[in-house]
Length: 219
Image 1 (tube, rainbow, N blue to C red):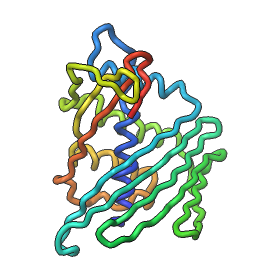
Image 2 (image 1 turned 120 degrees about the vertical axis):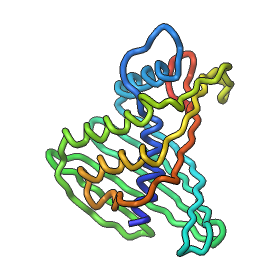
Image 3 (image 1 turned 90 degrees about the horizontal axis):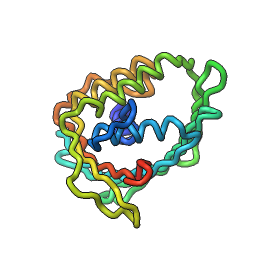
Image 4 (image 1 turned 180 degrees about the vertical axis):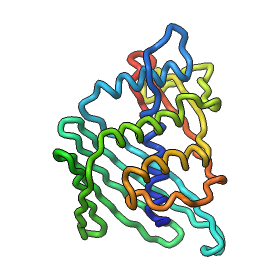
């Protein structure tokens, strides 16, 4: 259950941050209006590839302290067909161990087929596809940022690999994480794990770069 929870927090929340926001642009540039324009860009995309790197510190009494992990994840998504491919590496530097994982998910008619591979071993699972439930999950993800008081647009743009970019910072609380996981659990069941965990100490801080010229997301 903790492994499933870790995967949902790192992959689900970071992806939600990247894609959240809705509506049309306004004349005054704000953090909210920029995210709205990015959402419009993403809605028009037929395919999307994202790269995520995360540094995670876990602490528990069972561990007798803390344990550091690093995660590198590449995710490719298409809309026709509705499919998602994810490749992830999780390493524990202190133990000198690493684990590679792959997941391919595709929607066929009224079913979601998921192929998961860990250390060369593959499992296949099937579940019913409920479009309304998926839309509720997307709405919950958008709510993470749409009304966040923590959103802040930097006063100056920055150069990101030769592209002038707006920089937005913010944070997501444990309550926000729990709300999103709860909406996922009602739809995806055991795939998301148990959300009856104390998430009060969780805080996800993020920095978001958006191209000034075309409002495409940079990182």
